[in-house]
Amino acid sequence: MRRRVIIVTAVHAPSAAFLPDAYKSLCEQELPEGWEWHWLIQEDGHTDRVAPHVPDDPRVTFRQGRPGGPGVARTIALAHADGPYVKILDADDQLAPGALARDLAALEEHPDVGWATSRVLDLLPDGSTAGFPGDPEHGPLERGTVLASWAAHDYRAPVHPATLFVRRDLLVALGGWMALPASEDTGLLLALDAVSRGWFSSEVGLLYRKWEGQATGQSAHVDAGERAARMAVVETRARALAGFAWRFPPGSE
Image (tube, rainbow, N blue to C red; front, side, top):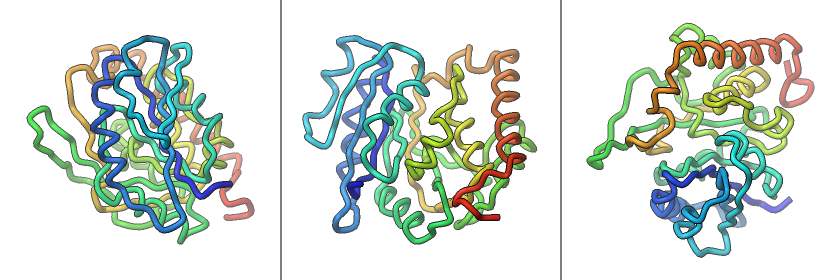
């Protein structure tokens, strides 16, 4: 398999205008000699409003598909992920300098670590940034750490799923993203936490854009009934995986 980091981005028309900013942040990344990145942009639907914002770059592949939400778009993009690592980059976010190299180094240097995350700053509409307290210590995250914290803090994970960097084989083994209307990335994060050690980088890895059109800002996202159902499925899956004692890497305790 080629020494590639696959960047996976789900996009829909309202967020397409942010793709050039995401691309700029990706072009500013530096990888070790012999490594390259390939950006898979998957539109959640078929419109004529996304393609004009897709960069003209041979390292960028754009596809469309029937709408099903960001989890479906990301998962279908995995069919074309021809590298050992997958990095998530939402269409409206930006990578911080050095993020890809740090993520890659963590997993290359620690073969018993299946995934990595990093510190996040909110990118506010006026261009300023804001952090928040509560990040874990820099370094490895033992299995079950994320689930325990998430369950104890009103379903708020201690690390951000939008920063996820993961081994492709492990991602595919878990089925990609959950088939949920939202929180599909949290569901994946907790599943990974249930079966594998993770890594947290205390250096900023992502600028998470806050804007009025983002999906997590819509009223449906905080509907109490749906939220409770999403969280129940996410938690039950993670605990079931932990209980089955399937581990990455195989044979680990």
